[in-house]
Image: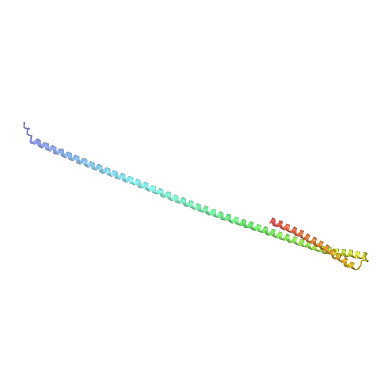
Length: 223
């Protein structure tokens, strides 16, 4: 069967309806596209604002961190300078104390040295003075011994001569050769007495010199 023929008005209506539907779809598509674009622009602007705010916050935090770092560095520099000054003052004080102590020690050492030198000089003067006094005393003793030796020899000679004269008077019958024989004992007797005196005097001198030597050795050992 052949299809029924469409009415021209219906075709026009269908065409008009299709065109209207297409226009509505196009309009709706444009509206959706405008909305999407508007939303995208709004989102982009929000993202830009958020990024700007975040960047501002980051920059502010960075500036704060930099400020804190600078303050900390300045504080560290001040502390280091203060410690350096304190260390320098401590070192100067230590050096000053060391110099003062060295000066005091040097003065004490010089005073002790001067005192020891004075004591040594006084001891030397005392020793030398005592030696001079002892020497004078020994010289006087030697002179006294020499004087005693001379008197002893003179007395011994006088005594022997008196004895010989007494013998000569008691024995007048002795021949002429007797005086010559008697003169020998006379000369021998004083010689014997002189030898005894001479032996006694050096012995006394030697004992005196030994005493002086012992005293000198004791004084030297004490020094």
